[in-house]
Amino acid sequence: MTSPAEIPSYLQVVALPRECGPVLVPSAYEDENGHMNIRHYFDLEAQAIAEVFDRMGITDDYRATRGQGFFTAEHHIRYYAEVHVGDRVSVHARIVERSDKVVHAMAFLVDDTTERLASTLEVTATHVDLTSRRVVPFAGDVAGAVDRELARTDVDWPAPVCGAMGVRARAAR
Image (cartoon, rainbow, N blue to C red):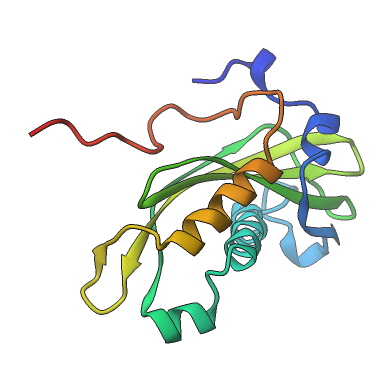
């Protein structure tokens, strides 16, 4: 588990590619507790992850022509700071690691108004054959695209992962 000292700073996060925003938080996003409702954190962060996957070539065309895509296997969301109506938020993303069939990624929602990390969404996504609905290895061009994205988001600070998910090595049989 990540301790508060290991949470990246606002400046560290905004050095990553911005995938979403800035968005001015509208009053429709407010919940009964006076801050942005959890569904909007998730929607914005999931949109950022989708942008990364699109950039890696996992698009509607890819799904249609190759019959393959990504399924989210797990996700974990954490909240670090409240976001309020009228704040400007942005979402940045990075690939944490990959195997030949799985991508482990994170989205970082920052409050640009307060200059704080507000939330993270951690995702593991499996590459699947959409006909058999089974996990399959990446083709070489897709693996290359994932590696380029991994290099593009390589930073000198550890991802604040939850520790309960990620790329797992299959035990010897």
